Length: 283
Image (cartoon, rainbow, N blue to C red):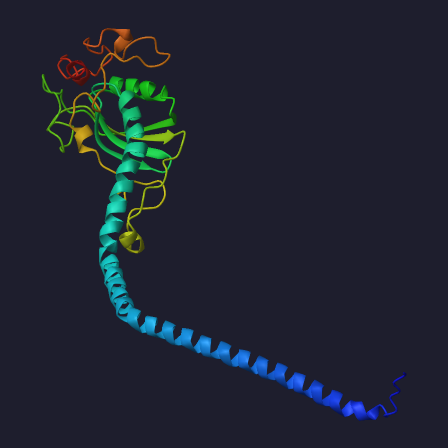
């Protein structure tokens, strides 16, 4: 038996539309419910984080106060730390820069030549010196010209000898002029031109704007350094050996390569035929 549907199709379209509408409403309600649930969860998390923030606020305030105190202490101690760094850098600079220069000059200084000041500046070193005779000045010049660290030596003489150096004169205490009162001899200035310039000295930050130590080439304390400890020693700078031989000179310093204890025969003669300063100081 055949079943024949004689109803028109529009009769079924109303029920289909109703079913589709119900499905879309259910989907929309599910989406809205999801949004509401997510918002509730986010609100709960936000409230928990706000409560945690409020609990941590006293610790944060305490940390801010401690940080402010630390910053204040650091600001107050900055000057001390600057001085510490300056002293550290100055000591390192002195040992690595000045000492090699001074020791090199010392090693090429003959006995009988006394220094009263030493001023390094840039590529030059200026010294005030004293010698008992012109022969000593000449030997000093020859000795220093053989220094491999020095490219030029300039000497300027001043003053005339008055009378011989007293016998047994062995210099003055530290900090005093090397020339004994009323002694003869020559004061002379020495300008040494170095092969390599002296590096700039460290500058103390607090005084950089107010006339502190120069940044280039000069002495660490603003005008070179004086060396009274070198000016009062009869043997020149500390450690100078009487028997050293200049490179290429073939013998120890002295007249004709004689022994270190022999007086220089080319020294000045005192009035009356006595021995000059060279004879009494080359001991």
